[in-house]
Length: 373
Image (cartoon, rainbow, N blue to C red):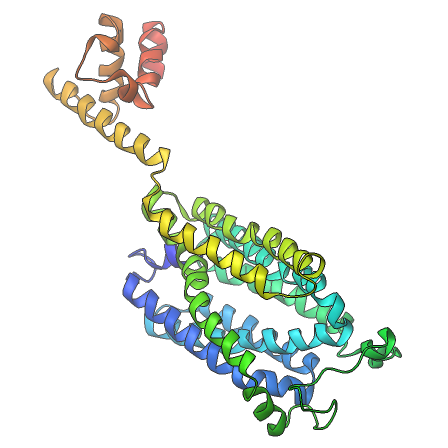
């Protein structure tokens, strides 16, 4: 979200290449972090790991808002990747502790709305903060909100049902405990040991899903990291407007996760792959078609550019009137003389919108009102 501000010369003047390198550092460290945060979550519990990761992310965000040099901003982005990697694996384990296999499709579909809605809210909040207080507050304000979430997590989160006097979820539902492979026995190894890690790595499905995610994630992070910049470059929007438009990507996410989770439970008998395959086909089609979509506002911008150019030529021909306020006066004179539509080269559809429309209204007002305007 902050990219549209960070690329301004009076802020940090970052180039797209530099911002891409920062994204790469973030993503690489995030991927590396997944290897050990999950194991640490098994060994020390979700609570400790996530509380530490969130607080480290808060502190890093505050530092990012105080940075004045590009290379240090890149280092902070990398650290953010490390701290934010502490959430996914431990929290996924946490959800598995409280919900059985037959419930997890719908429950996880609902839970997955957190990152989509969170991204939507964060984009809007950061955009408003940057516009109202300056680009640094695009880091400070989200850090403050995350601190509130950290407090709620500290007060209400527990690692497993047994921590609050409830039986394990499998026992409660009369289900067998999960195993890491078909030949394994539940509880054969302590969680977080390398034996369990090795057993997971021998599971072919883990490698298959990892390969799928490896191909999907570039698309997701492309939209997540660069849609505000893409929107601003293509539509000429400011930071807040770009945040609103790009946040539609996140806002639509909860619909997909909820529908996909429920459909996998109810229609596909708790099979997750059919829903994923259908969604990926639709995503691929949209990514191919999207660059060829021509937005109406782009056509209007082109017409307005022609209108402004023609109006300036009229101003020049009628005495070199200043093209700022003079353009409006000239257009008003044109309307008083017989209407803008008489000038075939000054296309009414373009010239009247938005400059000449205001000017024509000016031209039909009493002269003293026009001068006051």
